[in-house]
Length: 132
Image (cartoon, rainbow, N blue to C red; front, side, top):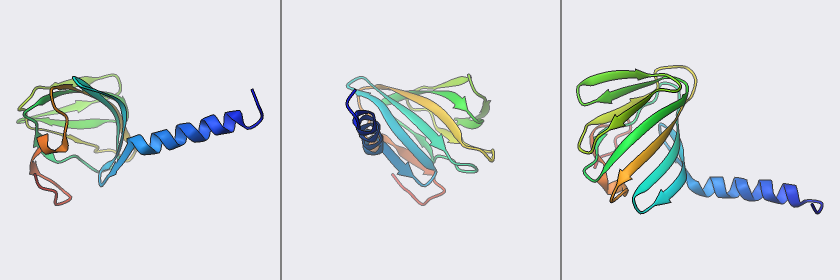
């Protein structure tokens, strides 16, 4: 390997991650795959933060916790997820992920459906004043 090649590769990877990472008031996510019939994200929720209570009409989601602990609202049900545990969120189901702990929550989200745009988010409650 030529001198500086490893540094170049590391810097390129960091640039690519930055372009695929979106920062939100509750934490951030990185897109790992974006295909016509599915999208995969690595999501990090900051301590004490939570998503809006929301639902989607054109996609289902699967959440798999990697680290930390998540509290999931699934319609009227509350579910606690620890590392290695997962939940399926059918299309049209109200849902929210919350991080009740003092450390970051990291999970993988797999979306399946025919559309993954932000305008397929119907928000019912939001701690940050977002609507839609």
